Picture 1 (cartoon, rainbow, N blue to C red):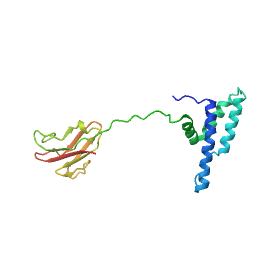
Picture 2: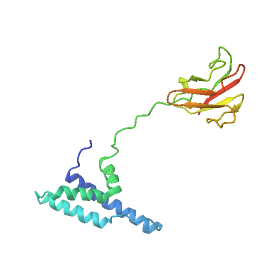
Picture 3: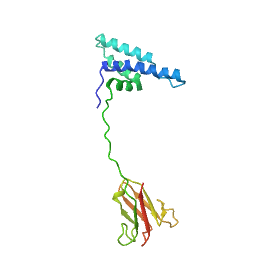
Picture 4: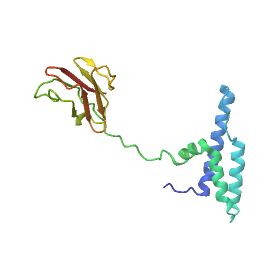
Length: 180
């Protein structure tokens, strides 16, 4: 859970947001049409000054927090930029993830001792879990749906590694399974 910003911190964000909003509006006037800021720098300035006045006056008014939240809302994207400017680089670090190396394609000729044996209609291919597959049978790419005309097809569950093949593999067929 993020820490709640203090009233003083929000006032500082408001002060920085004023010039960020002004700069954005000025670039629009200088370089041509652009979408104007939803809240003008003058409005941000007025609310920032009102909040500063309330804080410096030792106000015990419960609306100070509400006004501070309203100012933070008004600052919008400029408030986010202001926080970065005020606090420096901050924000933590990004830890690089593991690089994933695609498994090599699996090429074999169907036999009684091949990866998927003669007569088999399926297998579990753990090395390809998480990958989509291209399945070539005799050098011809196979569909993943049964079109109902007796042609061959395959099914693949990338979560479990379950491969289903129809019809059953025949002796001496050339098979190539490629992770993509």
